[in-house]
Amino acid sequence: MNFKPFALATLSVSSLFAQSVTPPALFNSALKDWPTYNGDYSGRRYSALSQVTSNNVRSLSLAWAFQTHTAATVKCTPLMVNGVLYFTLPDHVWAVDARTGRQIWHFHRPSEGNHIGQRGVAIYKDRVFFGTPDAHLVSLDARNGKQIWDVQIGDPAFGYYISMAPLVVKGRLLIGTSGDQADIPHSIQAIDPETGKVIWRWNSLPKPGEPGAATWPDKLSMSRGGGPAWITGTYDPNLNLTYWGTGNPHPVLAGSVRKGDNLYTCSIVALDADTGKLVWVFQPSPHDTHDWDAVETPVLFDAPFKGKSRKLLAQASRNGYFFVLDRTTGECLLTSQFVPSNWASSVDSKGRPIPDPAREPQPDGTLVKGASSGGTNWMAPSFDPQTGLFYVSGMSGFGVWYLALNGEQRPEDHQGGRADALWTDSALVALDYQTGKVCWTRYTGKGRTQAGILSTAGGLVFTGDVSGNLLAVDAKSGDIRWHTSPGGLLSSAPMTYEIDGRQYVVTAVDSVVYAWTLPEDYSSGVGHQNGSARIFKLRPTNGNDRGDRPAGILKRFGCKRQNGFRPLIRQECFLFRPMCVRS
Image 1 (cartoon, rainbow, N blue to C red):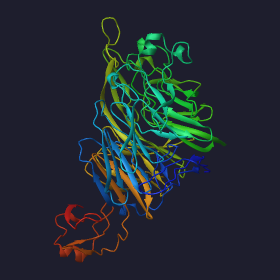
Image 2: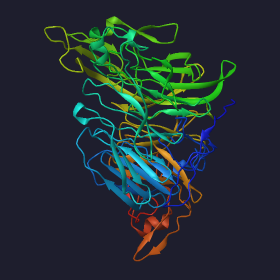
Image 3: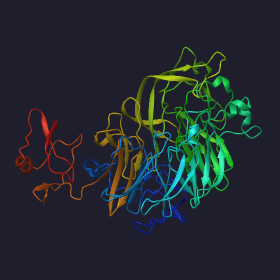
Image 4: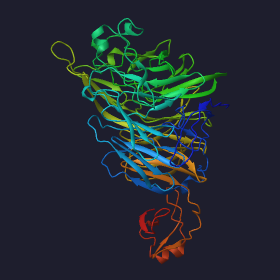
């Protein structure tokens, strides 16, 4: 299958403490760094690094772990530029050595506002940029973490906050506003990285008389708000278009007071990167009444489609449908379901699912097939050009949707009701982008998944499950090749980088950032003296490892197989502490 990576702006660097990240040339997924939220502009979260493979991933070992010492869960994707890893929590930014996990600097800015999560930073030249819970955008010196400027993007008194990582395009910071707890309109803005001033703004809700206004019944309903863009978009430098998904309309579940398609909510939009002008729009969920937005990553790739080479955009949307579009025109080429649902009665000639009125929320409840939180959510998907498969963290189940109106038959808040989950199952789903068919699924547990996805040229897909396991599965079959339990849940997406000739895979679990790599000599079993303790580099255990450790070492520490249990040796660079787990 002939996939052609399209041209993307490169990020060059100078030295460890003078990042000087600029985009003057072209690159693709062969990058050894991870310089932007999705790794590159395409949103594929695919890395051409191949040192870790299906054959050796079982020997993956812990290189280092960084404890943030907070109660918050790390939901960001770290960036790695020239040996420095940058990651965030709400109110916090860290820079650490990518080789050792040693802290270089830490920036802390306490704030009011919504602390639901923070998904990362952007880097441009020698500066780091991030959004805050009180809807500010902050610029830091990448060398030392000192603040350069701080500008307000939205008013937190009205419920605005910023959780997304900015996207650097043509020397501008693109950022969308977050906030779904009040009736507020949203926008995508281009910010000057030198001054923090707004260059252009695209509003996700039209004004009376503007294109899209006819999809709302009146001025009041149009002004009630919605359409946040709280997941980082993607960019095609050849077309000079940037692609974003938008959130749901308000009141969220009370569709009777806002009849119509309600553009530009629950939409995929293509904007001119120079002006912010809308070029085309496709709406995965017209007239959404289930809180199933379309902010999920618009993934870009050039590939054959039905015998013709196309510039494609693919999205696995929260409504449970998978879409493939021509990203030049916005034409829908494919619509299919990747998880079971019955909220839509049919698909129209434009490829849009048509809502079934019988499945809309009612005062006494409406049973709907589909997980109440959606077929997926913020969890980053991935596309592997080697397999031609699109990977998404999917959820299936049933829920009951309730409508809540006052005596005047109007909602009293932005929600207009509630949804109760009956049950939810999660799975890693692999889709054929040409047919939309599910090629395989890997069940990841009962309940709601929060894990994003990374695919690599090593033939692997990295993710997590509901039980707190980190997983590496075969990209073609979905078979598990490696797993470990770090003691918490993966609530972001793994990333990978190469430094000093070694590939690292980074996973953020609860409040800890873990970096994994292959041991330099993981099969020798030879230790070395370190004071009074002996440190060994041995293969970690996994589901296929039957405890084949050097017998002399085990005997020395008095660890024997007893009563169906086997010795487990801690991983690389940890003091040798045998313990027993069941075989």
